[in-house]
Amino acid sequence: MESLNGFIRRHSGTSRDKFLSDFPHPFLASRQKPESADSLFPGSWVIPVRKRAKELIGDSVTLGRAADSDIRIDAEAVSKHHCDFLISAGDIRVADANSTNGTFVNGARLAPKAPHAIKSGDRISFGETLVFYYLGPGELYDLLFGKKPGAQRG
Image 1: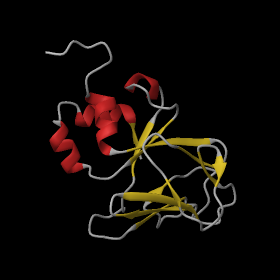
Image 2: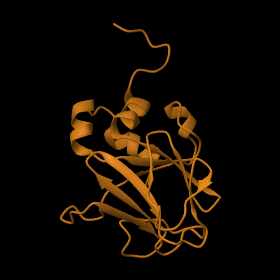
Image 3: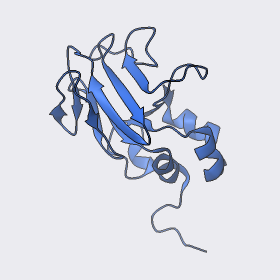
């Protein structure tokens, strides 16, 4: 998990093609629904949805408090093994791992172990208080580094 400010500093000036090559996976962005980079500040986080170690290949990315989670979030609302992101052929689904506080997509609590398809812009909550928005890599790049609304096209 990285602060959005740090992520922007590290990748500012990166071309879209290079960014998509380096980050082919989707992201979770915290706080408000991102309509512009400004709406993600202050105190936002960006989390790549990917395996923890590059040498590990698999179609499931685990999220939880446990040390062996691919995405580790040390928060009271998150169970040791909270949910799994299931990735196949460009499709991504999230499945609650029978967590204590539940996994929610756009406000609806998921049944344990029942994968639910998600798409860019969906609101994903772990418990009722820890909220993220799911974004594809292209959407995140355009949001952070693309043309700003009202910018002149040349």
